[in-house]
Length: 171
Image: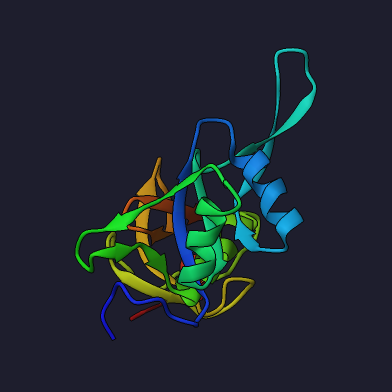
């Protein structure tokens, strides 16, 4: 099968939308019954009112077949542009497991704790063995004297979670 053929398997496609349009795109996708992922958070505006915003500006992850993804843009007029992967000469996709790991890390609590530190160094590739992130793989980084597990998505989107080193094993 060549990369440009339409396939019938569901994939997570990476798309960009205009600044501040992520939530409107989310509402359109929900109305169409299409699975999507847009990580959101809340923050207070200048009046003290909490508002929802996208944590990754301009990015939308859409789960569909290639034909459905193209139809969303062309037929339904969804205001997105799919990211092109120049290595494979097709629309960029993300593996299910990779997106699931990313979701878990974004949802992790930094209050989780352990008792014993495992000997890991900065930059080591590790797997989480306990807690809510069990099975997630990523890299160890240090930010302001604290250790974090970092997972990447699309080579330029990162999520971090503070994980006790006791819960990590080298991969």
